[in-house]
Amino acid sequence: MYLQAGSILQKIDYQLFKMKPQKIVIAIDSFKGCLTSAEAGEAAAQGVHAACPECQTIVLPVADGGEGMLDVLLAASNGKRITVRAHDPLMQPCDASYGISGDGNTAFVEMAAISGLPLVPADKRNPMKTTTFGTGELIHDALERGCLRFVIGLGGSATNDAGLGMLQALGFRFFDKEGHEVGSMEKGIALCGALLSEISSIDSSSAHPALKKACFTTACDVRNPFFGPNGAAHVFAPQKGADADMVKELDIAMQHLSDVIFHTTGKDVSLHPGAGAAGGMGGGLHAFLDAQLKPGIELLLETLDFAEKIKDADLLITGEGKSDRQTLMGKVPSGILQEARRQHIPVILLAGAIEDAGILNAAGFRGVFSITPSPISLEQAMQPEFAQENIQRTVEQICRIFF
Image (cartoon, rainbow, N blue to C red; front, side, top):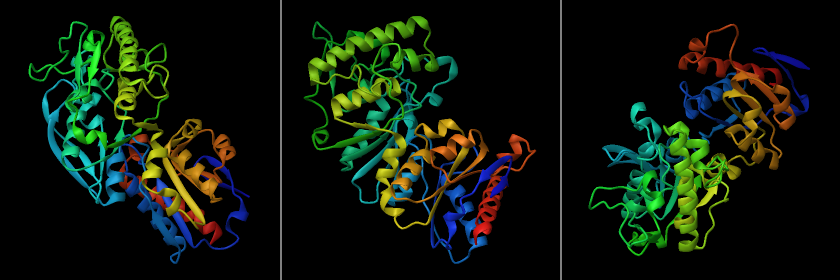
């Protein structure tokens, strides 16, 4: 049978619903600029209940490690938001937030909250001058509060300092070949891209003592190496304000720094997948804090104990603002589909706009549905109340076919 959903013609497998589902799990990514994950999920749950009031629905807010990660993890862990005074990428003091889980053991840090590109005016963006020092300040504050587990969201950074500014805020010290300290907060100088080439040795003896017991996991959705044509400087620095000469200088500095890191830690970050993430922050975290670099959705689902929460579900509904073949490249619906297939749970995908429906069906989604009636302007489609109504209506109509 075929069902028209928006402009997408969908094939529905009747075997999916030989019996009424008793448990439907809803895990929809945020519709960026429109709805949060929780808002989209609640709208879908209302649609299910309109068609089948007795059906159990479980709404699980989700994110891929970028925007919205902190809110999702705080909600899942019954945590609290902590606001502290820290330094932005240009070392200007400002307020920034991170989260602590309800049990007080785990800190959730989005580096973009304090070291992100939007914090730097467009005419001042320059990865030679920006620093991750503020991210280190957030981690330091969490260590002082007793946190020993850290989930760090990479992405959206304004920096290309390999995370050395972060390490500096945690007590690491850096020296040139003459033994002079490179970057010193006593002199008000934070580590930044322009200083990387001067570093010849790294001293961790003054690092925060709790780091020896701390465990770090990072949400990292890129596989770029530390340096080279696909490395941090060449791929990402131009987006952060670097011109061609800066890119070349930064890449040479990153190659030099990888040698220093190897001689200091014994770890080769040069080709480590994800080491080039967030201007080399992935490499710095891996080398000095022994951080595991994981795809954002994989990390989030693991932290949320997603596999356990969807057990015995009859159906899983996921979604995002736009779905196409890129959905399968580590985005939220793709990660959810992988876990659901391991448990033989069918998955339906909702989106504001759909492309490549056949590819998405072939990947395993049982049905792919656009929530947006056409014709309609993008402005109207992104009005929150209108989007919620469309999600509810689409889910209700899907469910009515079978109930």
